[in-house]
Length: 336
Image 1 (tube, rainbow, N blue to C red):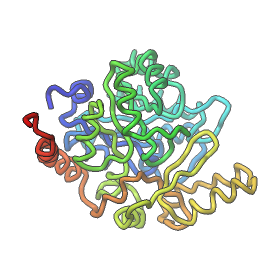
Image 2: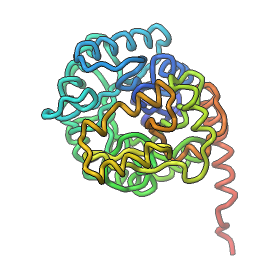
Image 3: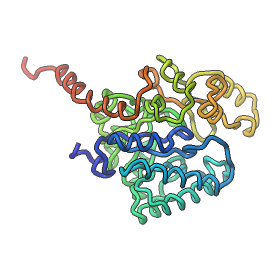
Image 4: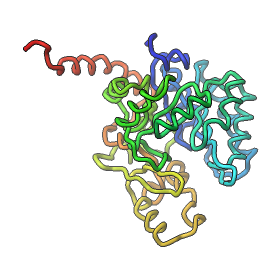
């Protein structure tokens, strides 16, 4: 897709970016996606199977994953950084963690960074001065304009259908993408509810230059998700996910006992410490699909097979032309 802005910007063959999904998007998946022509993205806890609250250990884990990706592919890839907040000291949203991880990533010479959960101006200039392309996640057109002003190379429009952590705003992919397309000049990636060629074509029609997909890549051979999680995804249908309010952010997860208990604990005024007992780790790494948290988008209901990452990308690109032909056939004739 030579004329595609995202492909030109990132140096990739297809406008498909694999979203970071915390523990389960490690080097094997990232390299597989990049080798297949998309852009793989390392998640915040990529490749880890134990919990740590040590800043340096977190950063060194990332260093090992970056080096592993480079040993598996010579194609571009991205690293996700949760920008975080200065007053928080939690491993996923504490600014100390993102600062040290960015230092390590720059030392290792990463080509692309994906920033989220925080203001775009914090790290964009530092990354750009090092020659790194910057993708920033937004949930409104105003945020997209702010990111463009901060100098990011492209924005990721996170629709409410998407899985994992997202803003408390409720704009769907179908609404936010055209709003952002009208508001900024930089390239746009559509995220939320996209898992196949129909989603890619729809995203392009809405004004996006490509797609940012997470849930479909959970059910791949290269994903680090526990086998129980992969099975839970492919067995899900219809309204299988629910949004959970988490104070500063929202989370969309597969329905289970966790998604029922969490709001009840919130309503009872349970302390933050009581609510944050690593539920994602419990599910994604340990395989507890009942009482753990499984971040998952609404597109889960369309996924029924565990395949390779290359098969996901190849099937989307092979089907895209067919979808467009069907669309053209459905258009009304101009002749009366």
